[in-house]
Amino acid sequence: IQLKNITRLCQTKPVVTINGQFPGPKIVAREGDRLIVKVINHVSNNVTIH
Image 1: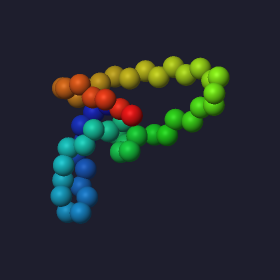
Image 2: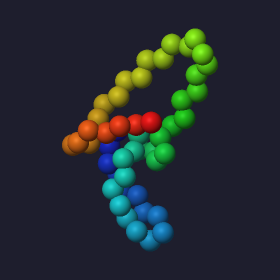
Image 3: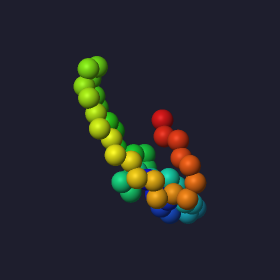
Image 4: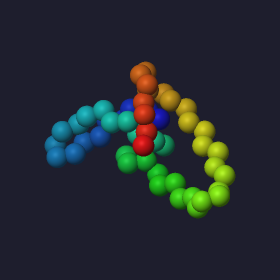
């Protein structure tokens, strides 16, 4: 997780990205699957991802 400057509609703003992507990559899982997700937060404040 990191901040990256994104330009949209002629405005540049810092946006929280995952692996340099906004929105972040899609995670597909089925009921009963086990996932291990390693998250490293490079943003200086707490971030909640839904």
